[in-house]
Length: 402
Image (cartoon, rainbow, N blue to C red; front, side):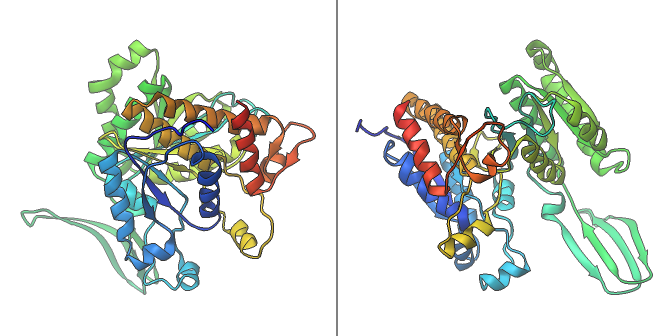
């Protein structure tokens, strides 16, 4: 075998949970370690280890990402009440992604992996739609109260000089719920700059949408900041590049997206981006065919798959039953991180390897060898359905032949 490709700077490697953790090891063993002298700084973000470290490991992994500039992350569990019991947790730890996003102040860009034989459900979508998700605040940093009975709920802001601003939320006559959410102009401005910069870098039009007609202060602030950043910093560059910035209401954007051809970036607030990225990826074919990259204003990159930990397959795997889990997005998380590491360190052979592995992955599917989820939706005929491990091994065969 040829000499392994050398790396000069480590990647930050964040291991995860359940079936994606199993795939993670298979990908490294079959597709990476045989070809690359893989240098990583390893952090175990599996739920047990997060619990043991009181979630310090998540913070440490984000700090390491700031230091080294590039990370690759496996899917992780965000615990709910059932997981509290299942894993005997000390507390209901927060979403690792949310913690990492907040520390890096990053924007998440998610795009479908387009492959021949997997046609989008929306027949007029010809090009990928990239979702840019604001990665701070809103419901993910909320404060909630369960209201036990009658009473008055108020929103209160106390300035540093002691001045109070009060707004009545609701006069409760019975039990109910309250949620307080926030954002900062600094974070929204970073989000806007990241979106405009990414649109320029990829030569794509940028859409942005909120509900400013209903939310006349909160959502309107997003709209105003985007407008100001665009006009002051990006309008001339957009014109020179022949691309456009388009603002509309979120419901109008959803309607327009369904009739569009694709080939643009759709910027969304945090919750909208969470929901719409799943809709877009599913409509393009499969949740397992969606890349995700967190980009910070400081130029730090964290790559991951856009899907979860595939719990159902993991339970089958634990029983010794065969699974056919799609590993494409997790492979592309690795290739994205390796390519970026190669670009930052001037390692052309590492960049070329990342390109070749992506090509081999797509060619394997186009040759009719795929996991069950793709076999159910492909337009190709006489396909071979492979289990989780054999699909990765088949990609290795394709890679060797390229």
